[in-house]
Amino acid sequence: MYYQLDIVSAVCIQIVEGNPHLRSLLGWHLQQVGYSVYQSASLQQAKDVYLNRQPQLVVLDSDLSDGNGLEFCRWLRQQSQPFVLILSARSAESDIVSGLRAGADDYLTKPFGMQEFLARVEALTRRSRPTIAPAILDYGDLKIDLVQRRVHLKHELIDLTPQEFSLLYVLAQAGGLPLSRSELLRKAWPDAIDNHRTVDTHVLSLRKKIEVDPRQPNLIQTVRNVGYRFNTEVPAPGLATATHSPNHQRTAIHSLT
Image (cartoon, rainbow, N blue to C red; front, side):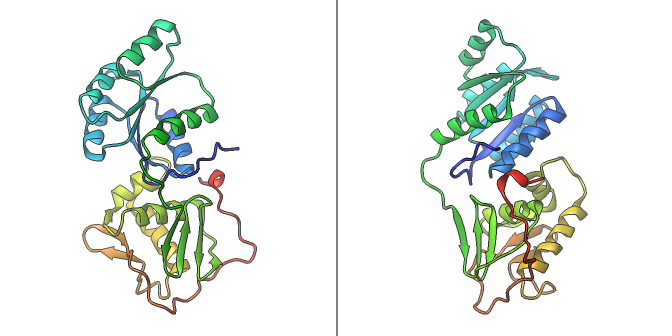
């Protein structure tokens, strides 16, 4: 069972982890509870991602292939000072003290349980949450429940797959700004994927479920030479109810794949 968070929308987390399997797993679990996640495999990549995305929390491996994670932690302290959670196989008291003195806000030794990891992340991000974000995004006939991860169209529950919900969530959270296919792959998919057609296929599937006319979409719009954007303006009255299965599968946080 997942450690459920009350509201995590709009919280951005960067994972800097050299182990690709652990990096993907952590990102996957964080996305289940609604965090926006960016992943980095090296220190150089981590600096670029941090400067471009300005995450509120950095989950940092202490030992990376191209340098010491503690040095990156010190570098972060010279920036806008995000919260830092260090992950390390080093469990000696001196190592923990070194990590905390380098500027980390918390230190978690490997191996660790996923529930403890999520609880520590929640404790840190709770400090950085200045206001209560809305639990439901309301676009007229379309309502997106960020806590239950459900979508209703004209009061009818729409049967979205976990990946379709993740894609819709990322598009809606962009506030009407266009997102490239590469950005959508990074933000909405739990694993590293470099196939832009995957985005197109899921967008088509989403349109079939929430658009009046999928061939002339009003909600998920194509931006030529860029990607897609979500139309944040309230849809016109009369939006048709999308087809859904009466035996829908509940799209819960723990079922995202």
